[in-house]
Length: 221
Image (cartoon, helix red, strand yellow):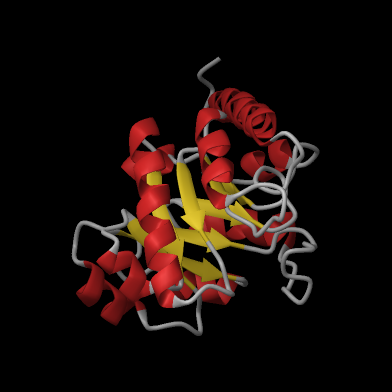
């Protein structure tokens, strides 16, 4: 499945010292597989104009470009996809707007919400917050056990989010995540490109370790 190859999803964050264009360029250069443009303060016109710029940067790096919540802007900007939450426009109608070929991600903050994603036409689940996060301090923390339980019940791409950084990526991947979504760990970092490179390398190492463990369990080595 193509989207299971999405290992590093970088979400933008508003900064006074680094523009969105710079964030996306550096994150893509560092190994991001997907960019999610998120801004809660811009008007739809501003979101649209910025999306066109960021999409071109992503295109030059062969990286998926998606937006957070703004379905109409994502459609108008011809983005690769959209990420929505449980309280946003229902996925059924998001799919009608975006069409069959666009990526739709849906947030799930509990086991039950994740199970509810199965019968919806989504391409991946954004599960978390796995750990406490400063980006959304009010978010419910799921922990690794819930992540593992969800992994055991579903086969669709599972992207972990929430408080993930270089210190805990391995345990997140070993718990069953196909990839991770990060905000502060890359786009909020001092050295965005280097941080993206480090995290991508840690993910790939964890994937190798997970595969070795799976082979041992299955008696292949």
